[in-house]
Length: 115
Image (tube, rainbow, N blue to C red; front, side, top):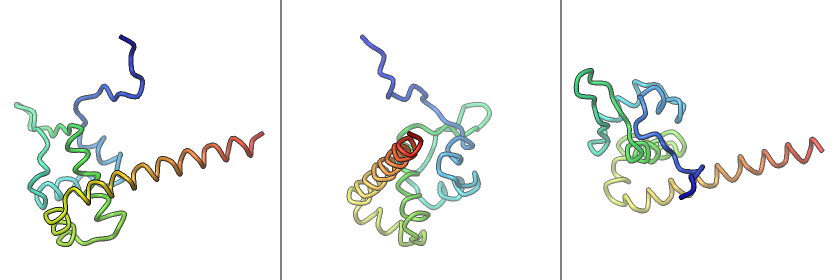
């Protein structure tokens, strides 16, 4: 079986890594854990260090999209998630894909300008 280079091999991420992914402070992630009960990363048994899995990162992506990108207050974000979670997830996925496409197009444009 061939190695899939697109597959993410890392199972757990530290709070610092996740904070850097989304451009927020670690304290913001801790606060979101208190405000959104469905967001609960695994804690290591002995040191109580947060370990975020891919499912946690997807939840953070949804919250980040609503609060930081679209500008909703936390109460509004909670309401949207509780009333229409699937719709909110789909919108976050679409937005993420559009941002990736935009970045790729900008990269291609820079390459074309270089030629």
